[in-house]
Image (cartoon, rainbow, N blue to C red; front, side, top):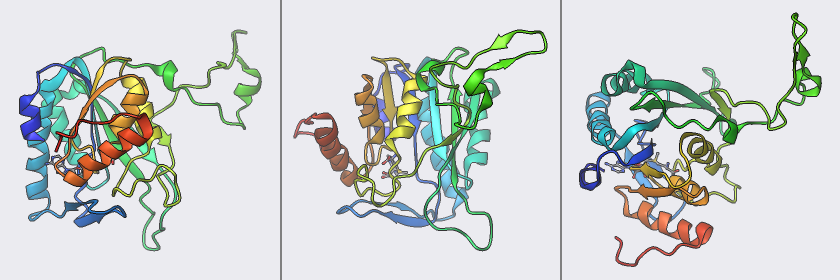
Length: 260
Ligand SMILES: C[S@@+](CC[C@H](N)C(=O)[O-])C[C@H]1O[C@@H](n2cnc3c(N)ncnc32)[C@H](O)[C@@H]1O
């Protein structure tokens, strides 16, 4: 990642999504051939945090003046990363902590089951792209407001928006379950719906989107389908070949065979 970042032109990315290893202490093994990555860190936080900080510092100058970074982590390190990002972007650079809540998988008997990830959204500038209307969600079926609106004490009537309600910072999006057609066998593959929402909201068509820990290539696929330009990379050859296969299958794009 550091090498790739050093080759790129500063201030060119509208949005960088980074989904690095989470410090799970495990080798993450998928179901596809060779699809695995090591998430064991000797010294744990003592080696992980400097690794992460070095990469965040390398990525920061690549964002355009009002560009956004979304860093995807979980309860293990999100709080450390938030302090780190405050230091890099300034505290005013913080915009949202998005909770991605999912169900499925096993349930703990000794504590509340951990069923969310944390996405930290920071911007380099004061006016990042934010297309609220592009990512509205349907009102809840039980919502009385959705059925008939409300009348305020002043007599003013508020009607529901036919496009749906603005999404808040807790996102219920299903994980890719073992039976899902989306599943490509790469460990910790993220759902296209998650990247679709982020890219639609935080960038415009034609913008350049980056992902420097791209894994199976979810960011590239979502960006391509949404008419954005993209640049992704990963340290794993299995990941690069997975992205290449997905692009062909899901977007009808054949990468040059000269690529590694
Ligand atoms: C959580 S996974 C990304 C999953 C991806 N978002 C997806 O939807 O498939 C983390 C990725 O970071 C990659 N990685 C680890 N260290 C890296 C490094 N130094 N540079 C680039 N990628 C790295 C791993 O190979 C792995 O594919």
